[in-house]
Image (cartoon, rainbow, N blue to C red; front, side):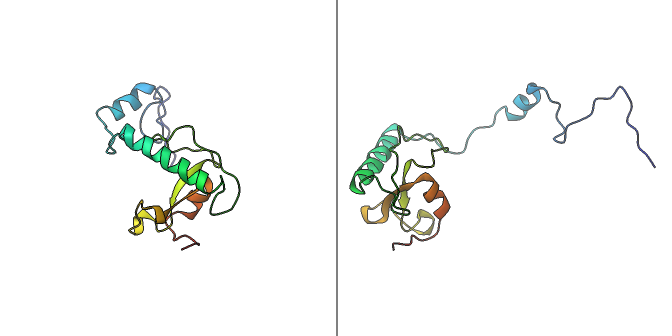
Amino acid sequence: MNHVSPQNEKPRSITGLDDSSSGMTNLLDGVTSKRPKKDPKRITRGLERVTKLFEKQNGKCYLCGAEMRLPKDFSERNVRHPLEATIDHLIPRLRGGTYRKDNIKAAHAHCNRSKGSKLSRST
């Protein structure tokens, strides 16, 4: 049995919303992020911390040994250049790791993401 939709009926998208931007705007009205905004002082501390680690490690990633880039800022952005220096926790925070000096090193953003929440090879 073939089901034929009427000629004058608009096809619906897989989301059930029309393609106009107003549908998406209405969908997101009143939605707020659960993540609190980062304190500017905390962002500055993060940039200072990664800069100190970068200098201490002579600009080398502790995971692969290649040169890193210093980040221009350390804001909430999640997209970083793969060669940008980030703070990596030898014992991941997910597993009880802290921000203590003996638990953090600088690593490429790519290497850090690849490592994920695994324990570091150097622990």
